[in-house]
Image (cartoon, rainbow, N blue to C red; front, side, top):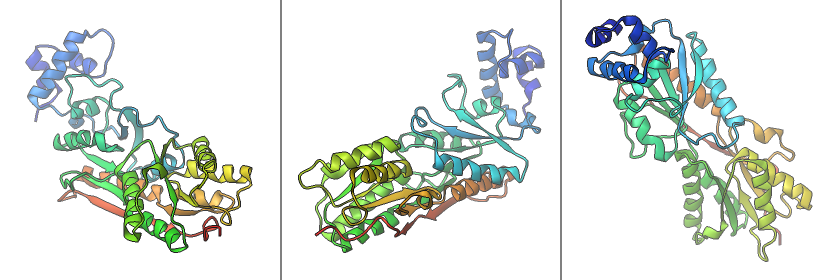
Length: 336
C-alpha cells in the first residue's frame, strides 16, 4: 500500500519534506508542494491511512451557502451530528470547499490534508455534482437535507420529504374556503425546499385553482423579510387570505407584522409556517406548520457516516424522513 515514503522516494526527497508540504508548513515552495500533490495522486497514496489518530468529521458546505442565518435548523442539525459521532469519540469541523483547496488536488487529497476521516455535506441542487464526484472518488460522504436528483443510488444521503405535508397544508386551507394563498420560498435552495414548492403547486392543481406566480415570494430566511411580505400583501386591493412560509425566521417575521398591523390571526388572515425543530412552540400564537426534525436528520447522517467508515454498509445508504403538518392557532376560515 502506497505510503508517504512512497511519495518521498518518487520525488527523491525526505518524508519530512512531503509531510511539511501536505501540512502547508513554512519553508516549502509552491512548486514543491505541487509536485508532492501530483505524486500523491500518481502513486495512489491516501493520506487517511496515515491518520489513524485523526478523529475529525467534516461538515462541508459549498460556496455562498451560508449567506443566510445559521439558526435553529443548523443548530439542531449539527447537534444531532455531534451526538451521533461523539459515541465513537469523533469531533467535527466546518469546512468551506473553496477556502484553500489546491487546483491540482482532488477532494480526497484535500480532505486528507484537512485530516478528515469522512464528511457530511449540505448542498444545493447546483452543487450535487460535487457530492457525486466525492462519492465516486471513494471518500466517505453523506449528503444531508437533500436527495440526489435522478435517484442516483451511488451516493449516501439522509433527507426529509416535505412535498406531501406541504400539499396537505395547502389543501387544509383550500378546504376551509381559501382560494388566494401566497407562498414564500427561501433564496437558498435545496431539493427539500423545492419539494415544498411542488407540494404547493400539487394542491392548487388538485383543487382546480390556477397557479399564479404573482403570489410566490422569494425572500431571505430572516424576520425582516417575513415582515416585508405581510406588509406587501396587505397593500394590495384584493390581498390573499392566507400565506405559507417555508422558514421559521420568516414565519416569526410574518407573525410580528400581523401583530403590529392589528391583523388578527386567524380571524383576518391565516398563516402556515415551517419548523425545523421546535420553533412553532415558542411563538405566540403557536403557528400551524409543516414540521421536520433537523436534529434527527443530523443524528441519522452522523450514524450513517460511522457505518460507512466501519465498512458495514453493503449498499448505498438512503434515508428519507417524513415531515408532518400540524394545525395550531394561526389558521381558520377566510374572512367573510
